[in-house]
Image 1 (cartoon, rainbow, N blue to C red):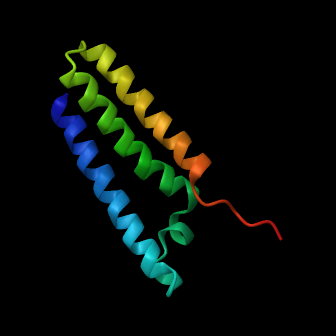
Image 2: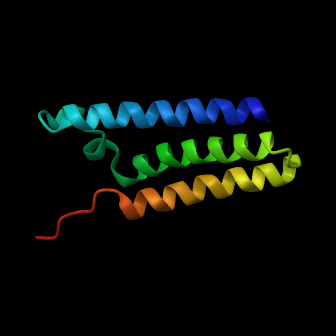
Length: 94
């Protein structure tokens, strides 16, 4: 299971870096903006993947049993996704 958590961590953190860079380029050209392309759902998936991997890796290296590590990984993914939703960009109301 450690390999799955490691892959999720690398993909999630890499996705966050790419999202941030493309968001910066997207301010000049909306063709590159991932927020316009994938919206809130895409942002939640990327951040949730990072949270899943980090939660799983942390609990595995803490010596938790595999079922408890899976619960921690899912909890980490949900927690990070909820924080991303709360702290991320909000839609402007006209």
